[in-house]
Amino acid sequence: MSTDSPVTAPIGSAASPADPARAALAEAVARRRNFAIISHPDAGKTTLTEKLLLYGGAIQQAGAVKAKGEQRKVTSDWMELEKQRGISITSTVLQFDYSGSTINLLDTPGHQDFSEDTYRTLAAADNAVMLEDAAKGLEPQTRKLFEVCRMRKIPIFTLINKMDRPGREPLELIDEIEKELGLACWPVNWPIGSGDRFRGVIDRRSQDVILFQRAERGRQSEERRLGAAEARASGLVEAELLDAAFDELELLDGAGADLDLEQVHAGELSPVFFGSAMTNFGVRPFLDAFLELAQRPTARQSSAGPVDPLAPGFSGFVFKLQANMDPRHRDRVAFVRVCSGHFEKDMTVQHARSGRAIRLSRPQKLFGQEREVVEDAYPGDVIGLNNPGMFAIGDTLYLGPKVEYEGIPCFSPEIFAWLRNPNPSAFKSFRKGVNELREEGAVQVLYDTDASKRDPILAAVGQLQLEVVQYRLENEYGVKTRLEPMEFTVARWVSGGWPALEKVGRIFNCKTVRDPWDRPVLLFRNDWNLNQLHEDHPQLELAAVAPVVSGVEPIAL
Ligand code: G4P
Image 1: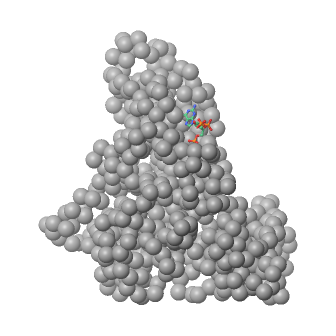
Image 2: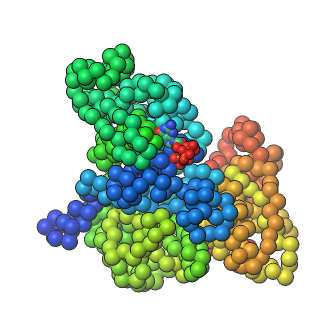
Image 3: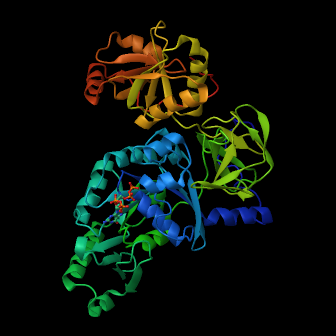
């Protein structure tokens, strides 16, 4: 099939259902669920991840994935910088089986180690779990990550955490999501009491009462499911708390909306759950309902039309590159999200961008720090490939008719700095390092429009990206650099390019720079200046996210 032929049904969707290989593939796809957790630091992502892994039997005790502080320093010999800072730069995927499903949890760093990788990981996710602290509600990092999910229209499941502590009113939290994110909510369960008097939840669909008993840290909690009348008679929960919870549920039911799965899968309606990850309240009911309602790997858009996961030919795309995961080997790993077909070790696949065939002889599955060679993988899975510099973010690998997945956009940077090389004799290594790190997606690079100012401007979404670039330039390319922070916090790409910019004439309170594809980018000190420009020149169209460029080589330093 040619790449530009119009396709209506997803590629691969018409194959014979009687084929045993296809039946095995269909079975594997049906059991897979893939998701990422989006949250603000301290909402409880690590704690929730740990509890989910405990249910999946993937770890034996709590504390095994606590990726922070001293413990992290002991268990990780990852990157020196990582050790110094006691943080995890590298997000990977955690795979575990639970209740007949194979779950891929894509890890998105949400702390001070926030970077573009966090956004890119969402390009590989089929579902997102938005985790909120009941006392805080929506927080800035969650909002940003939500916007990326919205761009991709992925289903969002909301889990309101820390119900064992005093928090905001549940109705108020829901209202905030609906109003501020414009995301309709459908509570799947409803809390009975909160803080010291949190007694459990009502399962809205069955109207059962699920009572929880506080468990020791790391132990699975005791959950008792009782009918409403039984719960009332049991004396295990105060009547007034139960009445209040049922009254609120009635209010919600009165509002009329149904749990419409189509709307959930279109990212328009969020099933909402209440619980407490730390004390294990509500984690299992959440996981069970999530597996039932979440979107399984679905058709993905490509240059040849949507590709069905059941298409017989393997295909996937690179969503993340990671260097130096094992400093002893100075290796680079490309993470590939499998989109269609059955992937098998030693397969020879096509690399869409270069047109070359590549044998994938050492695919890896990564579980935190550990790696094992994978024999096979299915749509929704993530595999790690050794990357001798061949793969770039967004690259497609495929077998059979050519497909090329939509690239991953550059995200709007918020931190900018000149990168100075004080040693002119190291210019060659400096240039090589900057260009390679940009290609790898470690940071975005912009240039002054004045050609005499040759130093690159680094642009990032997290401060850590800049530190990583400096660190790697020194350790891998032998160049010591200096960063000079710039006062900008907002970048916008000019949609009509240079002609559109010239048309509006002189503009104020922003700096015009160019990206590696020679497109104009405007840098602003703050949103106020940006809004001012919108008011002065409403006809000038600006984009917060850089459109993907394909087929055009970037300008190097
Ligand atoms: P993060 O990965 O999203 O940053 O959050 P993390 O799981 O590290 O949790 C942040 C803090 O919130 C931790 O406390 C954790 O124990 C606590 N926490 C998580 N879930 C709950 C919950 O359901 N209820 C309550 N009460 N607390 C919760 P910490 O003091 O920072 O760390 P630690 O000493 O407890 O490990």
